[in-house]
Length: 402
Image (cartoon, rainbow, N blue to C red; front, side, top):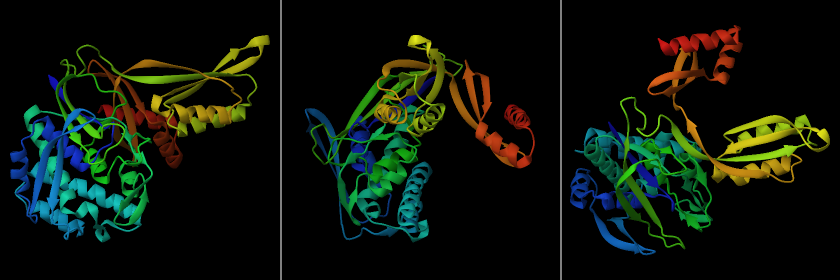
């Protein structure tokens, strides 16, 4: 069986128009997109689609030309607009979900409720076309490919300030910051906004997972969507469609394991107090360390010492080093990159006596071999119910199995 991947390579961020351009560059027909968009009861607009070159790379640029006087809409207006259209139910559902995500983000920023939010830029015709058009293209690809697992690279947010309806705001704009909660993000030398709220909400709505490296796949199609700004680097969004082959057990035919690239940082500590080492661990986890552990060692003159080891992603290395140098007595570290092989893991939720317990399940060749209820969930339930922790673990595993 084949599982197809749609990979968003956001090396220059993501926006609505860049996403539309990438989809068209992948091969979605402009006429098909325009015919589907005509099912929306929107004021007059047209798509200006043209081929452009960014740093010598050919790409598709999409501009929505529309009447700018009709820019302010509340969520119910947009919801009615989409529901009353002749679009497919799947496109309607995805599009409405996108605007609900946007409304929740705006409500959080403005400290109000979603029913009181009125959209500015995102309620404008061009933003509606970007979002709904992207969902139209995604559903079309889904029909063509049979299945699509959406994966994205980490998001470079840019730097500086951006001008919008509310004035001059910091990058990332507050709505973008809300929408990218839980996403791996990073700064970028480019002075300007690289990830827009529209771009962020598209990834959120498509439930993208994130990978620091391109997933293993056989690349079938590539599309480039052009942004409107010019930077030192090519302002493009690149989409890959690839084929990931699986055996009957559901794993990659070349391996029974998932894999990724991580960075390992080590340092030896012979004059650091246990309290400082413990505090350093807390701070390292707060800076996105994947794992932190200590190993008893003997150093010169037979001094009992501790080796601190941190596993992290390369993108987080500077924050990790800063914690080590600030919070421990280390004056030097060792660093190397390595490949991890992992069991394929899934998270499930069970209800133990009224408490929600997450259960992590690791599988090999399609069979679960490692079942681990989350400690914090179990501990909370054990404290509240005043029963042994082991009993919660046992009940959670039993509920998951049956």
